[in-house]
Length: 131
Image: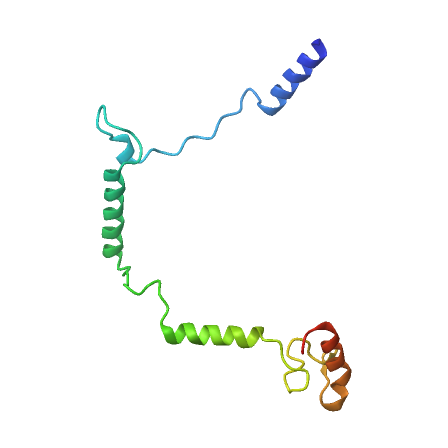
């Protein structure tokens, strides 16, 4: 029993040296420190409203404009993005020119073209890279 207690004290002594200092706490925001006496402390609706107003006013002073369409995409942009994504993800046909889109015919840095790329087309078909 004594050995267990001594071992426990050694673990405590090793993990928390006597001269160790704890990290200082971050400063409390002024809005939370100045809570009305007897009132609730912490985040209240009034504190949140005040913080939002201060942030908006600060952004206006710094020249950061908030656009009404800041988070939206126009239909043309969305359509182009989606079309490009679908074209990139589409599995090509093995009998057309883009059969080796996902598996290029290369030997090292040298590209293989024409009828010499037939083994790569067959490999792409077997791997499911083209249909």
